[in-house]
Amino acid sequence: QTVVTQEPSLTVSPGGTVTLTCASSTGAVTSGYYPNWFQQKPGQAPRALIYSTSNKHSWTPARFSGSLLGGKAALTLSGVQPEDEAEYYCLLYYGDEGVFGGGTKLTVL
Amino acid sequence: EVQLVESGGGLVNPGGSLRLSCAASGFTFSNALMSWVRQAPGKGLEWVGRIKSNTHGGTTDYAAPVKGRFTISRDDSKNTVYLQMSSLKTEDTAVYYCVEGPFLPYWGQGILVTVSS
Image (tube, rainbow over all chains, first blue to last red; front, top):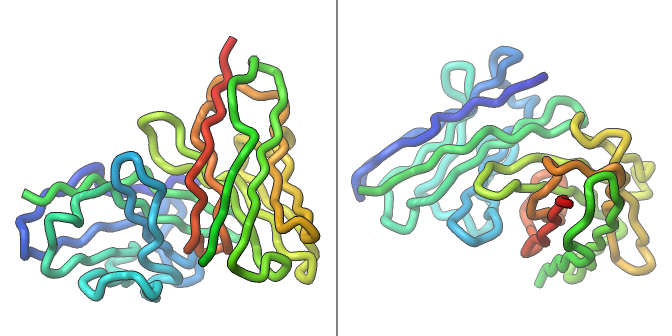
């Protein structure tokens, strides 16, 4: 069974920069896994941020960026705002099946 | 404005069946791949499955835990996608989200399915 692994939790100061990563149990993550990133706040539906590694949706703030880093998919937040405190999920596609990571709880403190 | 509205959730006994519906508006539904994602209480997101547009064969794909028990279908005349769930287990208890596309830009508000005796 394929497992997608994210950091369980990270803490960042307001105005700082933080990188969240997304690893695959099958090996290095490439663009062929079409990495997606989502933000979810308590009581809300998830919000899509990044698709196909680094593409932003029209509503994605400029401070969010996606990339591949060291064999993983990565989501970098630059100039973190208090409202960025949330759970973040990555999604990888293995052919026709999608697998979400377990999520990273980002605390802004 | 894209809208996705799920319905049909509720309480069901283990081993029972339930059908969720998702009414879509604000985009060309017949051209859209539609996905289902679920979230168990206090847990993370889980990809459930998807159905391609009929112009792409209308084929379906499922996650391993639901394969053979869940069926996704669509009615383009009603702009609606369905999730038929059978042989339900307690671990299927979750909020089920209807989502547009493979890259999941647009989400419904979610609907709760509780499997319990």
